[in-house]
Amino acid sequence: MKLAKRIERVEASKTLQVKEKALQLQAQGIAVIDLTAGEPDFRTPANIARAGIRAIEEGFTHYTANTGIPELRRSIAEKLKKDNGLNYTPEQIVVSNGAKQSVLNALFAVVGAGDEVIIPAPYWVSYPEQVKIAEASPVIVDTSAAGFKLTPELLEAHLTERTRAIILNTPCNPTGVVYSPGELSELAAILAKRDIWIISDEIYEKIIFDGLSHRSIASLQNLSEKSIVINGFSKSYAMTGWRVGYAAAPLPVAKAMAKIQSHYTSNASSISQKAALEALNGPQEEVEFMRREFEKRRDYIREKLSDQPFLSFVNPQGAFYFFIKVSRVYGCRCESGLIQNSIDFATYLAEKYHLVTVPGAAFGADAYIRLSFANSLEQIQLGIERLLEGMRAMLRQKQES
Image (cartoon, rainbow, N blue to C red; front, side, top):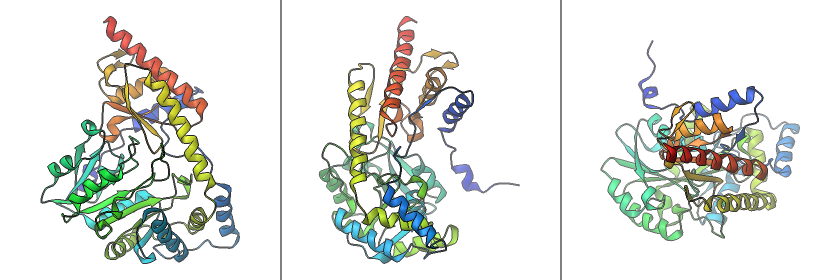
């Protein structure tokens, strides 16, 4: 029996090989430094956790409205107004099982076979595959020569008659770059003239450094009429396991997304929605505490890496990742063979130095690896030492051969 053709278009995770190696090492009792985490290492703030417990104790454990409980949708609309200058009614909000589902809901609602979706690279690993699942075609735009940001020139060069949507992520996973208001305005000026949907993934908006503030492209050039703003609670509130994300969109799109969701997951967890409501309306000190801790870790890693002439990296102004260029070691030989790409190098680090990172190939940038600083400073220090030791060993070997 044959599988559906759409499955043939979707690629398996490029990180699986390295993760499997890490699990094998851990099963052997080897202490592995894992710097792959795409989630905060902090516990969910206590007030939020208690709200979830109360929901259970009060019997709030049944289905809710498909799009989310009314009070949560109202609070999200208020948050978008207060934080982002965006005017949405609760009817324009769709609460989902994480921001990942919100992105896929949006794609199902606005693109289909024959359509193209522009995705700046490096990109979050799921964007191209979700576009393929929606039966559209991802158009990958290499931004490495432009500071890892989409520029007006790059955007114009990749627009075609088939362009139906663009996915923009700021702060960005995996690079940590943050688009300035001016940079967003330049893109907005182009997009305002085109019949193109903008899917703006803003999940890292509160994890931002250097005194910067987040700006939503949907707040510019009246773009809210053609924008779908994606956000959630996983990163800012350390709620990855609670699975609550949301989208804000023009009413016809929100209704379409709600219709789609009604047929394959229905509502997000009732308990998690109550916790999310507390996250928005309760104290915000823990959010700022986590942000400051991430910034301290960022500063430590940046200082350690800045002294190394043999590597370069993207300076993250948001999120909690370093994107480190390691291609200088490509062509070197290790015990398991020739290092030809980021997967080979990440595998080498895992096998030889018991350090687990994410190959840049997963993000459309094979010259790099991604290192997460959502871990304790002690683990980060050990991880950086092992990374530098591994690179030095490879470069010495390359010089000697």
